[in-house]
Image (tube, rainbow, N blue to C red; front, side):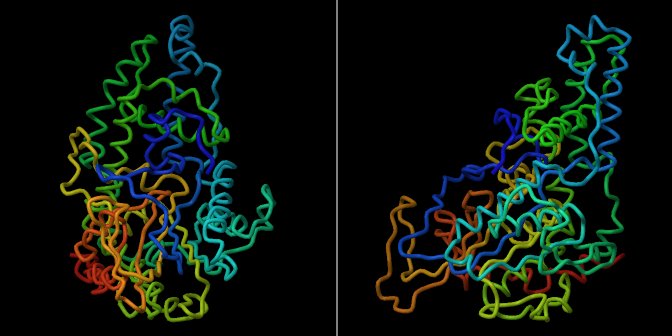
Length: 460
């Protein structure tokens, strides 16, 4: 995958603005090898992927332009002080980034991801793919580049000539879309951002000292915590805009400051749309039920967070054996963290503390979970034997009496095998990242029972 030309302590602490990188392990769990267990084979692949690198949203872009403008104005008033400071480059910097659409680096990310899946699962690629996307421009274009790469077509290529995904689901208020849920009335009515939100509490702890440090370099410079947040985000956006070449904005912050920035985004995603949100699991439950339908080959029969019109039609929601063996769904980071919560994976034992510091080896790290072009791959395996781990991951005991074999589920998030710490999966879930298909289905009873949709999403 394309990478930012930045040290890890920067590139892996940009939260959702990180470029996808290979994850070695999650939290304090041991690394689980990606090699398939003995004699097992992948028989189905389900991909949940975020859109690739983009420009900032309008609001954040305005904040970035304001912060850059403050520095340039102060440098104009005090050119000598500015020239001697770490901010000297800002005098010649002009903020010209667009808003929200993909950058070329992102296009290459999505294309490369398609090539990677085609190569990794070559034995399944001949059956093609079934790709769904929301209608949001950056998501839809990412799906198109993925499909282009999967088919081994050239890059670059005229965007207008890219093939469309198989299904494009409209996005908007009240529309029933499992990849971008907007019909949970209570969630839609809840305030989007509040000053006392956990991530804002943390911002007001770690950012003011950074602002004070930078303000001291140039007389009358008055950067705020909001400005610091914007400038740290600019590091990622500017690097992506320059095709991975390091932005000068990345170098004005130290390792501790970058780690604190990452924790801001961990809190924002955790409480804003995942385990710390009262709505997230219900909102993510529809996609989980669709995943189970594909894994089992049985229709979705649960009401709530699903689109029954689309899911009951084999042309818009095909199921095995009358379907390709590779499925890919394209969405956003805010939607994917809801699906992660509904699945119950990478869940910390305690809520993340809003006032910090970041817990050691916590699982919910946004740069690992939802960077640009993040990819959660759910594999369905067929193994001729049952097995369970002994003291070491590589030491397996096989049940030679099993004649018909066993089906398993394994999840790989950004090249890292996810430990499935789900009660039904047992020790093989934690040690090997494997869960017998039947056990995995049983572990998802919350979603299969409707995800508390009526209770959670009803207005008071």
